[in-house]
Length: 470
Ligand code: GLU
Image 1 (cartoon, helix red, strand yellow):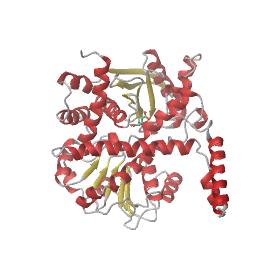
Image 2: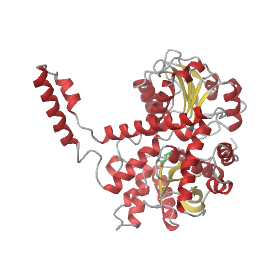
Image 3: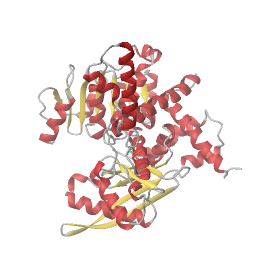
């Protein structure tokens, strides 16, 4: 699929939102553009030949440092795509109050065509190229996982960076999404999916919005189709099902889609996919060979959680979902959005809905800088205080709690509890902020525009406070 207009699409969204702000035109232009674009071509020995690898790192905005954003491995990577994704990171961080500028990286490869050893060589060489130009570092630019990368790649990046900066005490903060054993944080892998869940649950709680859609408030029982069964799609579907009681009726992957109107058991499907390396042949759902057809099926919520440009002006008129939750970055084009909004579809935008990943990355970075696990200092103290309180209540009321009740009441928060709670709070508070902007402006077409207005306000303020626009 052509990727050439992705950055322009993001720009269009920003320009639309800018009309609702009082920020000077020049400042909007400064916010829109990419501050630094680094294109690299480096040689890697693959088998008997030398391959020239094309890669990028784009720092979209330096209004806050470090800059932050994932690194993707995909054949579709090009400068336009990385610029657009970097820009989305800036707005995303602003919406969820994560104090970073936006960045993104990409290596133009299909990771499936390389052995782990070859991928390690490519990743380490790419990291070295970033080090050479100051495009990585805990106070400069902090990569993370994205499409085609995960914990493994992040630990190679951390190890390479540390090898070149052995005396830097905060060196582990040079990248997030690391394995827990390599100074990562519990809950980072599921974070984007968990954020999608919290965000959709929040959106479905609004009685008025649900009434307009002809839906009852609450996420429980809502029918959901998820496109993508990688990290974001899988965890979104799993948590929507396990904690939200939503009914996942469709899952789309690149090799085809699965449909079952009675619901698909997500854990069972993941197990099947791991064992067979495909979702094809899963016994408890109907297989649909043309994967994207399922996007047009009847459902309450459609979650595109794969790649950009999936809902376009071609398929938008046929979409029947009442809510679209953008788990991926840029899955709906501006032309498609116009069509969907006219049809009354509620779109929960990427820059808010998939911000769970970078939110927990921020927690990981804080952990790396503070060199202490969240909860370590206070958990036991908290448990002691809770215990005293429970004992006092038991004494005064003469009632005894069961062992299970006691455990629940007394338990102090450990790292995973704090990460989830911090993420939940972020997703709820941010939704309230953007929803309020949307409701305040009668003429504002979408929650996306409201999210951009929210982000522009914060970024604009940061620039103005720097004093470079006297
Ligand atoms: N790649 C993820 C995103 O697009 C996470 C970025 C990060 O954690 O820095 O939001």
